[in-house]
Length: 398
Image 1: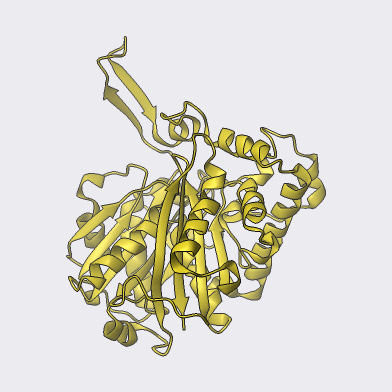
Image 2: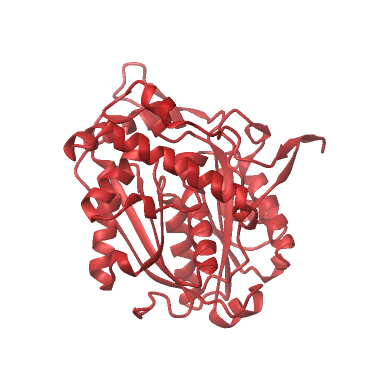
């Protein structure tokens, strides 16, 4: 394996200190009824307990969320209190890139030797997203109303376009064929269900009993609610909402949380369930492409990342991405001369949904777990984000 210098030589991700909830589709589970910040904090404490890691080990908490939640003003410290550990914290928000950026921020804090152990906790609830009323003197009504999830999906203030329009525009630019996109999507569902049936997802996902304010159970979150097996014919039969985009070849909004720890090398060995495993930060970049071409941005980020590290796609043991549109993967494969069948072996957000902030965190967790199963190597994770942004990061498992 080619050796590349770590971007954070004093920081590691201790194996086996991570976990994620399942991601039920919006409005489809008890998570639609709770304060997601409180749920996430309590869920992180639950995961750490099951991983046999004392929450008292944490000195700092990086949280990531993109949708306003009750008491968000108090952000990290409030969520830490829900976790049962009175520590300081910081909130990171960068649309769908939040998960990777939060992990990098925690790595930076530990690498600077400010802390020995920092927690990363990302979460979002797209269900019943808040509606805000904003003073706006330029408006004839003197106020403007924003429905946080719906309006942001449907309007880019830089272009006036929708998220979906970026997929159609990019598909036309790269002359992507709907037949390929349908076949790609069908494979992604097969990959997910193969991972589920093999027990792989049980290594990284946890079930949670959701309680109401009286402490009574609202139900158990024990699956990615809304995900069901599909046929290639059903994908072929779906009407195009834009070029190469159908309801079946794009993701769906969801609710959920995902967490992991970052620690100094010595502390990482102490906390890890398998201290012989070493997980390093190698590099991370963001790029921004031309207006309305979001699906091409992840490939551009990966190209820049490979150029800066001297690595190639052949050096990557695991390749996994956030792909709200199947078009993303088709464009990536075409521009990188890479076989899309070799990506996302254990599932991806195209299938299991898109709660925004925790999406890339779950992708990182699954990718690292897969790399461990394969005996180590470089792990490439990447994805797109609002504003025609692409993000990409490389980790090394040894």
